[in-house]
Image (cartoon, rainbow, N blue to C red; front, side, top):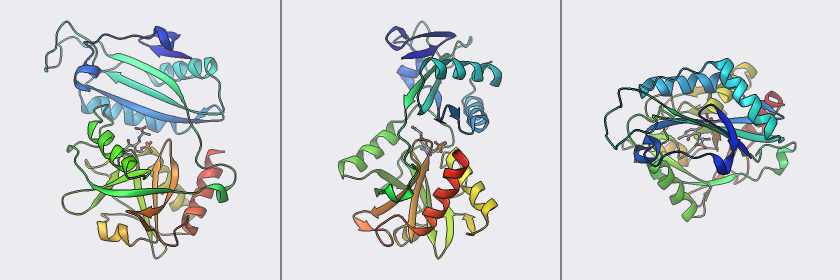
Amino acid sequence: SDVYLNGEMLPLEKAQISVLDRGFLFGDGVYEVIPVFHGHPLRLEKHMERLNASLAAIQLPVEITITEWRSIFDQLLSRNPGQHQALYLQISRGSYASRQHGFPTETRPTVFVMTMPLAPRINDSLDDVKGGTAITAPDQRWQRCDIKSTSLLSNVMHHQLALNSGATEAILVDAEGRVTEGSSSNVFIVRDGTIITPPRSHKILSGITRALVLELVVNDGTYPCEERDVSVNELTTADEIWITSSSKEILPIIELNGIPVGKGKPGGVWRHVAGLYQTYKA
Ligand code: PDD
């Protein structure tokens, strides 16, 4: 497949960067994963806004306009056609003559974009969705989880913990016993017909899928929803648990720490909201 690297389209095998790249040495970079359904990137503007917020937070100036991004994405998607895929975009602070922690005075960012296959979790029939399983784990990350940083060591370790116990995702709990998010997803719960998700803060990534779900639920009006702290006790006794992300869409969690959630199958509120999402993305 062809990828984009620093202004060029080239075959994946030819795309190479220096071992002195700060993305490699320090994890000094940010990224985005943008789902593409039927050739159309979903919520592209929101992803680019979040990218710019991440770049501003790490003080990395990048002069690429939305029009230029769009043209890069269009070229990549036409070179790598596919029904459902994702655009993976990463910008690091670039490579310099030696390894020094401090920001270099002259910035030459490394800009990389590739397409990745994406298996849509929400297909035509919601009946086919089996749901996933999760464990809870102490959130061991830093205080700026709102930055979509490529420094993902804690997330990777949290996720592997889940895989090692046969689960799909680790749902993270802070030192005060509040649910933050998944290792690579946001978390929603349903209690007595109310949809609840932890509020935006430095403790979570502000998910594009999370925002879309909230928007769809509010516009639809069938279920009340709240953005507020969720205790681990509210999580373990929830009627439904969902995790959301650009790649997982809205995935119902049917078992938490080996115990069935609700009736142990995707819930009725999930079904309704997944239907709204399906209509939106069609
Ligand atoms: N992860 N929280 C974390 C820690 C994430 O890594 C992600 C996404 C989300 C959901 O955000 P969104 O709805 O914008 O995808 C929340 C991506 C998909 C990844 O790392 O592959």
